[in-house]
Length: 259
Image (cartoon, rainbow, N blue to C red; front, top):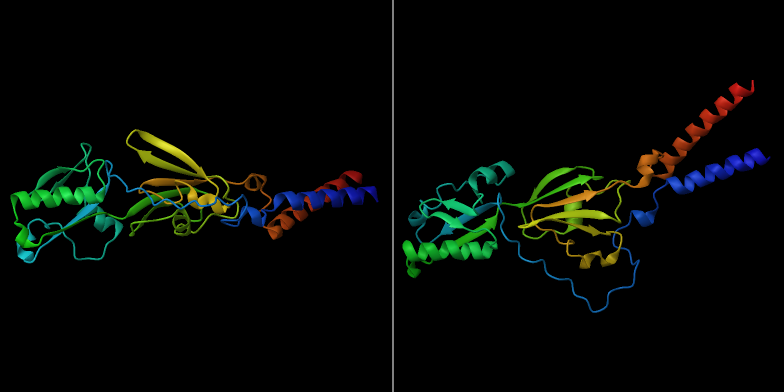
Protein backbone atom coordinates (compact mmCIF):
# COMPACT_ATOMS: atom_id res chain seq x y z
CA UNK A 1 0.00 0.00 0.00
CA UNK A 2 2.82 2.35 0.91
CA UNK A 3 4.58 1.55 -2.37
CA UNK A 4 1.45 2.40 -4.37
CA UNK A 5 0.98 5.62 -2.45
CA UNK A 6 4.60 6.61 -3.03
CA UNK A 7 4.34 5.80 -6.73
CA UNK A 8 1.17 7.85 -7.05
CA UNK A 9 2.75 10.77 -5.19
CA UNK A 10 5.80 10.75 -7.47
CA UNK A 11 3.53 10.50 -10.51
CA UNK A 12 1.43 13.46 -9.35
CA UNK A 13 4.51 15.54 -8.53
CA UNK A 14 6.02 14.94 -11.95
CA UNK A 15 2.74 15.87 -13.64
CA UNK A 16 2.50 19.14 -11.72
CA UNK A 17 6.10 20.21 -12.30
CA UNK A 18 6.60 19.09 -15.89
CA UNK A 19 3.66 20.84 -17.57
CA UNK A 20 3.84 24.44 -18.76
CA UNK A 21 1.14 26.42 -16.97
CA UNK A 22 -1.24 28.80 -18.72
CA UNK A 23 0.32 31.66 -16.74
CA UNK A 24 3.56 30.99 -18.59
CA UNK A 25 1.78 31.01 -21.95
CA UNK A 26 -0.69 33.90 -21.75
CA UNK A 27 0.41 37.32 -22.97
CA UNK A 28 -0.24 40.66 -21.24
CA UNK A 29 -1.80 39.44 -18.00
CA UNK A 30 -2.72 41.84 -15.18
CA UNK A 31 -0.02 40.42 -12.93
CA UNK A 32 1.38 43.54 -11.31
CA UNK A 33 -0.29 46.80 -10.24
CA UNK A 34 -1.33 48.84 -13.23
CA UNK A 35 0.86 51.86 -13.86
CA UNK A 36 -1.54 54.76 -13.44
CA UNK A 37 -1.57 57.78 -15.74
CA UNK A 38 1.28 56.44 -17.84
CA UNK A 39 1.06 56.89 -21.56
CA UNK A 40 2.76 54.54 -23.97
CA UNK A 41 5.68 56.46 -25.36
CA UNK A 42 5.86 56.77 -29.11
CA UNK A 43 8.78 54.89 -30.57
CA UNK A 44 11.74 57.19 -31.10
CA UNK A 45 12.60 57.82 -34.75
CA UNK A 46 15.15 55.33 -35.99
CA UNK A 47 18.53 56.76 -36.96
CA UNK A 48 20.30 55.28 -39.94
CA UNK A 49 23.32 53.07 -39.36
CA UNK A 50 26.02 51.50 -41.50
CA UNK A 51 24.70 48.72 -43.80
CA UNK A 52 21.12 50.00 -43.68
CA UNK A 53 19.40 49.99 -47.07
CA UNK A 54 17.14 52.89 -48.05
CA UNK A 55 14.99 53.62 -51.06
CA UNK A 56 14.93 57.10 -52.59
CA UNK A 57 12.07 58.14 -54.87
CA UNK A 58 12.08 61.51 -56.64
CA UNK A 59 9.03 62.91 -58.43
CA UNK A 60 8.08 66.16 -60.11
CA UNK A 61 5.38 67.51 -62.43
CA UNK A 62 7.44 66.32 -65.40
CA UNK A 63 8.63 62.78 -64.74
CA UNK A 64 11.14 62.98 -67.59
CA UNK A 65 13.12 65.53 -65.61
CA UNK A 66 13.79 63.05 -62.80
CA UNK A 67 14.34 59.85 -64.79
CA UNK A 68 18.10 60.15 -64.45
CA UNK A 69 17.82 60.47 -60.67
CA UNK A 70 15.63 57.34 -60.48
CA UNK A 71 17.85 55.21 -62.70
CA UNK A 72 17.63 52.20 -60.39
CA UNK A 73 13.88 52.39 -59.81
CA UNK A 74 12.25 48.98 -60.16
CA UNK A 75 8.76 48.36 -61.47
CA UNK A 76 8.40 44.87 -59.99
CA UNK A 77 6.81 44.16 -56.63
CA UNK A 78 9.12 44.61 -53.61
CA UNK A 79 10.96 41.54 -52.38
CA UNK A 80 13.92 41.27 -50.04
CA UNK A 81 16.27 40.61 -52.96
CA UNK A 82 14.79 43.29 -55.20
CA UNK A 83 14.90 45.95 -52.49
CA UNK A 84 18.47 45.04 -51.58
CA UNK A 85 19.80 45.30 -55.14
CA UNK A 86 17.81 48.42 -56.03
CA UNK A 87 18.15 50.30 -52.75
CA UNK A 88 21.02 52.44 -51.52
CA UNK A 89 23.26 50.97 -48.82
CA UNK A 90 24.76 53.19 -46.14
CA UNK A 91 28.50 52.56 -46.53
CA UNK A 92 31.19 52.43 -43.84
CA UNK A 93 31.53 56.21 -43.99
CA UNK A 94 27.80 56.76 -43.52
CA UNK A 95 27.14 57.78 -47.13
CA UNK A 96 24.63 56.72 -49.75
CA UNK A 97 25.62 57.19 -53.38
CA UNK A 98 22.84 58.51 -55.60
CA UNK A 99 22.80 58.90 -59.39
CA UNK A 100 24.03 62.38 -60.43
CA UNK A 101 23.90 63.69 -56.85
CA UNK A 102 26.81 61.56 -55.72
CA UNK A 103 27.49 60.83 -52.06
CA UNK A 104 25.25 62.15 -49.30
CA UNK A 105 26.04 61.48 -45.66
CA UNK A 106 23.02 60.13 -43.77
CA UNK A 107 24.65 58.33 -40.85
CA UNK A 108 22.74 59.07 -37.65
CA UNK A 109 19.93 60.80 -39.56
CA UNK A 110 16.28 59.86 -39.46
CA UNK A 111 14.73 59.08 -42.83
CA UNK A 112 13.02 62.48 -42.67
CA UNK A 113 16.34 64.24 -42.12
CA UNK A 114 17.84 62.24 -44.99
CA UNK A 115 14.91 63.24 -47.21
CA UNK A 116 15.49 66.92 -46.43
CA UNK A 117 19.18 66.57 -47.35
CA UNK A 118 18.36 65.01 -50.72
CA UNK A 119 15.62 67.53 -51.47
CA UNK A 120 17.80 70.49 -50.47
CA UNK A 121 20.62 69.35 -52.77
CA UNK A 122 18.21 68.85 -55.67
CA UNK A 123 16.66 72.30 -55.23
CA UNK A 124 20.00 74.04 -54.87
CA UNK A 125 21.70 72.40 -57.86
CA UNK A 126 19.10 71.10 -60.31
CA UNK A 127 15.52 72.28 -59.76
CA UNK A 128 13.50 75.35 -58.96
CA UNK A 129 10.62 75.40 -56.50
CA UNK A 130 8.21 75.66 -59.44
CA UNK A 131 9.09 72.08 -60.35
CA UNK A 132 7.00 70.94 -57.35
CA UNK A 133 9.63 68.45 -56.32
CA UNK A 134 8.57 65.50 -54.18
CA UNK A 135 11.22 63.35 -52.48
CA UNK A 136 10.59 60.20 -50.47
CA UNK A 137 13.24 58.37 -48.43
CA UNK A 138 12.31 55.14 -46.67
CA UNK A 139 14.04 52.21 -45.07
CA UNK A 140 13.96 49.26 -47.44
CA UNK A 141 11.74 47.26 -45.11
CA UNK A 142 11.72 46.77 -41.35
CA UNK A 143 14.42 44.16 -40.72
CA UNK A 144 14.77 42.15 -37.54
CA UNK A 145 15.79 38.66 -36.46
CA UNK A 146 14.30 36.16 -34.01
CA UNK A 147 16.16 33.17 -32.58
CA UNK A 148 15.70 30.59 -29.88
CA UNK A 149 12.32 29.15 -28.95
CA UNK A 150 10.29 30.47 -31.88
CA UNK A 151 8.62 28.34 -34.52
CA UNK A 152 10.31 29.94 -37.53
CA UNK A 153 13.64 31.48 -36.47
CA UNK A 154 15.66 33.68 -38.78
CA UNK A 155 15.86 37.15 -40.29
CA UNK A 156 12.58 38.75 -41.35
CA UNK A 157 11.52 41.86 -43.25
CA UNK A 158 8.18 43.63 -42.77
CA UNK A 159 7.13 46.41 -45.12
CA UNK A 160 5.76 48.78 -42.51
CA UNK A 161 7.16 51.66 -40.46
CA UNK A 162 6.19 50.53 -36.97
CA UNK A 163 6.37 47.02 -35.50
CA UNK A 164 5.78 45.87 -31.93
CA UNK A 165 7.35 42.76 -30.46
CA UNK A 166 4.11 40.76 -30.49
CA UNK A 167 3.68 41.43 -34.22
CA UNK A 168 7.29 40.43 -34.81
CA UNK A 169 6.86 37.16 -32.91
CA UNK A 170 3.60 36.40 -34.69
CA UNK A 171 5.49 36.79 -37.97
CA UNK A 172 7.89 34.01 -36.94
CA UNK A 173 5.15 31.62 -35.88
CA UNK A 174 5.00 32.79 -32.24
CA UNK A 175 6.98 31.49 -29.27
CA UNK A 176 7.00 27.70 -28.85
CA UNK A 177 5.19 26.16 -25.88
CA UNK A 178 8.55 25.65 -24.16
CA UNK A 179 9.74 29.22 -24.76
CA UNK A 180 10.21 31.58 -21.80
CA UNK A 181 7.82 34.47 -22.41
CA UNK A 182 8.72 36.02 -19.05
CA UNK A 183 12.30 36.85 -19.98
CA UNK A 184 12.52 37.65 -23.69
CA UNK A 185 15.79 39.31 -24.67
CA UNK A 186 16.02 42.11 -27.23
CA UNK A 187 19.46 43.07 -28.52
CA UNK A 188 19.51 46.58 -29.97
CA UNK A 189 22.29 48.20 -31.98
CA UNK A 190 23.58 51.66 -31.17
CA UNK A 191 26.50 53.58 -32.69
CA UNK A 192 28.52 52.78 -29.56
CA UNK A 193 27.65 49.08 -29.42
CA UNK A 194 24.84 46.66 -28.58
CA UNK A 195 22.53 46.92 -25.56
CA UNK A 196 20.50 43.99 -24.22
CA UNK A 197 16.98 44.48 -22.83
CA UNK A 198 14.65 42.04 -21.09
CA UNK A 199 10.87 42.12 -21.39
CA UNK A 200 8.18 40.03 -19.67
CA UNK A 201 5.52 39.46 -22.32
CA UNK A 202 3.17 37.81 -19.83
CA UNK A 203 2.80 41.11 -17.96
CA UNK A 204 0.40 43.77 -19.27
CA UNK A 205 2.93 46.45 -18.27
CA UNK A 206 5.19 45.16 -21.06
CA UNK A 207 3.58 47.74 -23.34
CA UNK A 208 5.53 50.42 -21.44
CA UNK A 209 8.89 48.76 -22.11
CA UNK A 210 11.36 50.64 -24.35
CA UNK A 211 11.57 47.54 -26.54
CA UNK A 212 7.84 46.81 -26.88
CA UNK A 213 8.09 48.72 -30.14
CA UNK A 214 11.05 47.36 -32.04
CA UNK A 215 13.64 49.24 -34.03
CA UNK A 216 15.11 48.03 -37.31
CA UNK A 217 17.93 45.50 -36.88
CA UNK A 218 16.73 44.38 -33.42
CA UNK A 219 17.44 40.77 -32.47
CA UNK A 220 14.86 38.88 -30.39
CA UNK A 221 16.03 35.87 -28.40
CA UNK A 222 13.65 33.55 -26.54
CA UNK A 223 15.34 31.14 -24.16
CA UNK A 224 13.83 27.72 -23.34
CA UNK A 225 11.94 26.90 -20.16
CA UNK A 226 13.44 24.31 -17.83
CA UNK A 227 10.70 21.87 -18.90
CA UNK A 228 12.40 21.51 -22.27
CA UNK A 229 15.68 20.33 -20.73
CA UNK A 230 13.75 17.78 -18.67
CA UNK A 231 12.34 16.31 -21.87
CA UNK A 232 8.94 15.66 -20.32
CA UNK A 233 6.96 17.68 -22.85
CA UNK A 234 5.16 20.96 -22.62
CA UNK A 235 1.53 19.85 -22.45
CA UNK A 236 -0.19 17.56 -19.99
CA UNK A 237 -0.68 14.94 -22.70
CA UNK A 238 3.01 14.94 -23.62
CA UNK A 239 4.07 14.83 -19.97
CA UNK A 240 1.66 11.98 -19.22
CA UNK A 241 2.99 9.92 -22.11
CA UNK A 242 6.58 10.48 -21.00
CA UNK A 243 5.86 9.65 -17.36
CA UNK A 244 3.90 6.49 -18.23
CA UNK A 245 6.78 5.33 -20.40
CA UNK A 246 9.26 6.00 -17.60
CA UNK A 247 7.12 4.23 -15.00
CA UNK A 248 6.64 1.26 -17.32
CA UNK A 249 10.39 1.00 -17.75
CA UNK A 250 11.00 1.21 -14.00
CA UNK A 251 8.32 -1.42 -13.33
CA UNK A 252 9.79 -3.77 -15.93
CA UNK A 253 13.28 -3.44 -14.47
CA UNK A 254 11.90 -4.00 -10.96
CA UNK A 255 10.09 -7.20 -11.98
CA UNK A 256 13.15 -8.53 -13.80
CA UNK A 257 15.38 -7.91 -10.81
CA UNK A 258 12.79 -9.39 -8.43
CA UNK A 259 12.71 -12.64 -10.37
